[in-house]
Structure formats: structure tokens, C-alpha cells
Image 1 (cartoon, rainbow, N blue to C red):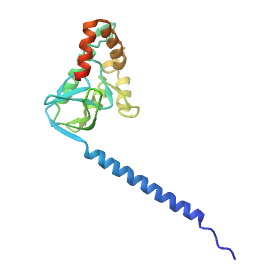
Image 2 (cartoon, rainbow, N blue to C red; image 1 turned 90 degrees about the vertical axis):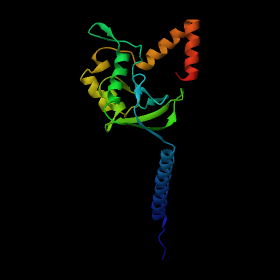
Image 3 (cartoon, one colour; image 1 turned 180 degrees about the horizontal axis):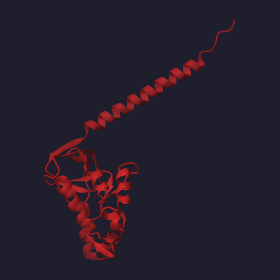
Image 4 (cartoon, helix red, strand yellow; image 1 turned 90 degrees about the horizontal axis):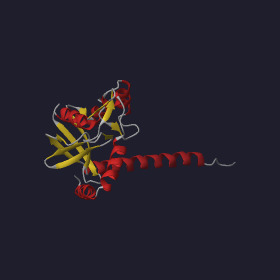
Length: 192
């Protein structure tokens, strides 16, 4: 009489152990990442449509890109200051309750990348929903952006240039003028 091989059971057992170790490793990594998170709470001010400041430190809202302060958009045949309006919208949202922000990574300008809420609502999601910012992540805030497009809110009420494209074009134009190019270089180095 031959004994049955235990290989199928052994493969299932080894697979289950592998999956359990993978989940455990992911949980440990998430816990360690959470330990590095910095948290801030208090009165923040809007610098532009996606950057806020607290006690002379600047923070960048994760997952969105808003028109630049000097950027204009077009609606009903005329230009309007969509960048300045985005800043005003963010300023309004920062006044809806106690602002709480957390994050652990910095961008190339040394701004802490943060998720923020005010009055229990995600500020970046509200900026996208109001039509004053676009999402930079495929799944993050996609429903809010679709609703803003459908309702033709904010920048979706006409035509606009994507903020990253506007920055690219204007940075190149700044570099054509020697003094302005130098000022832009210094600003980039200092993170202003």
C-alpha cells in the first residue's frame, strides 16, 4: 500500500503562511510610517489654492493641484483670476472649524505633504468638489472631480490650463528674462 503524498496540503499551508507574513509585514510598515507622521492643529492660512502655512512653516495638500495665484482661466468669453479665487476658496475652508493636518513626507520645496481636515471634512476633497483644484491621484477625489465637472463648478465653468502646464510654461518664460530667472532660481532654492 502506498501512502498519499501531502504535497497539495503542504502548498496550501505554505501559501497561507506566506500571505500571513505578507500581511504582518504590511501592518508593521504602516505602523512605522505612522510613527513618523507629524501632526498639526490650529489656525492655518492659505498661501495659494493648495498650500497652507502654520507658524511660518508651509504645507502642501496631498492629492490636488490648484491654479497658481497669477493664473487666469476663461469663462463666458472673458478671463477671470481662477488662481486668486482658488486661494480664497481654501481660505474659506480653513475657517470652517479647527484645522488638523498630518503627514510624514516632504516635497522638493521642503514643504510637508499633508492631509488636512476642518470641521471633520477633508479640505483637499472640498477644494476639488468646489472646482478649484484638480486631483493628481487617479482614484483620490475622482468622484468629487467628476461632480465638479458635471456641475461646471469653479475652473470647470469654462476652459483652463492644467496648473502643472501653466507652471511649466511660465517657468520657461521667467528663465528667458535674466533677472526674473535668477529670482525664480533663488525662490526655488529657498522653497518660496
